[in-house]
Amino acid sequence: MEYIFNDVLEIKNGKNQKTVENSEGKYPIYGSGGVIGYADDYICDADTVIIGRKGNINNPIYVSEPFWNVDTAFGLVPKREVLLPRYLFYFCKKYNFEKLNKTVTIPSLTKSDLLNVKMELPAIYEQQLIVDKLTRIESIINLRKHELTALDTLIKARFVEMFGNPEANEKEWKMNTFGDICTVRQGLQIPISKRLTQYEDDCYEYITVQYLHGGKEREYIKSPKTSVICTQNDILMTRTGNTGMVVTGVDGVFHNNFFLIDFDRNKYDKDFLVQYLKLDIIQADILRRAGTSTIPDLNHSDFYKIKIFEPPIELQKQFTELITQVDKSKSAVKKALDETQLLFDSLMQEYFG
Image 1 (cartoon, rainbow, N blue to C red):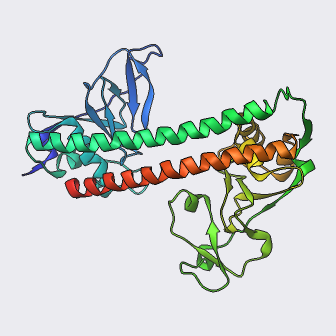
Image 2: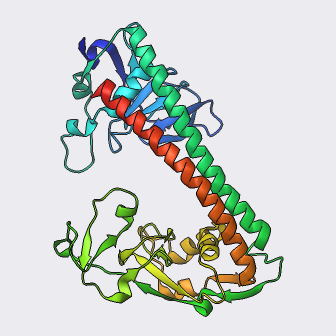
Image 3: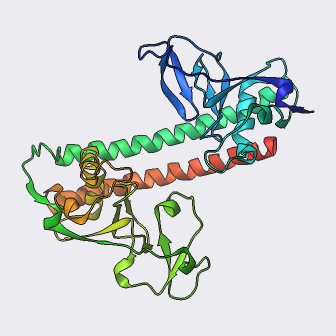
């Protein structure tokens, strides 16, 4: 049976948190993007769904404890005799709230528009069956993601065990700077009008941050200079914007936001260097050197000043062997994750359209 939100839920407006804010408070304070502090009081009861009123309007959050919502977030409280909280949450995850946005600057929703959202609502017992199935699959997805994180943590721990801390250099390796062991070159900045959307002869994929994150369709560059072409055995690192992101294993033409790090392969192994650049202490150094402006920007000379130790190449290659084994495990977990995510997505489509 079809209902509108006004029939099956109440919307609780958020309020300014200043009068209740307390870092040691019992109740979380939620904005449209998540927890932003703690409070001594709450507005919404447990098992409420948050929808952003302004800004992040298409990212529903399920909250299983009482909380205070600020004025940029609505609290959707279901009438439980007809609508289960988790069912509402899954519906909201599938629903495109962007189509209710009427502004051209900051995305916004109105209470009146939300109350008129239509939804098909099966009986409570059917809702529970759907929720149980989706929750089970989501728990498997989260388990797979945890496994991937654990494997990444294993690599970091093994790196420190084998080579020590770069700052302390307790193993007394020879110290260099990146200026001693490599040169860097930037990629290609090219207008959208000159990018191809279909592959042609002598074309290369255009490697951008957006493309790597899956947020952009493939684009191609025809007949580029060799200086902006990378292979899977190269190391790229973002120099501006999302500064410090390390990328390897890709072929194509790399964007101007990247450095290609052309290093001395007689002294350094690629996988060792990739992991070194990903270390928290090195990432912090990279960001510090990139500056604190709105868009951090790491220049060549500052990158060259970053220190790096030089363990024996044979030991670096032993580390690469470990990474190869871990990567096999990660590939198996990633395959299982992708399959489970596909099942979840197909069920969400089946239940909520």
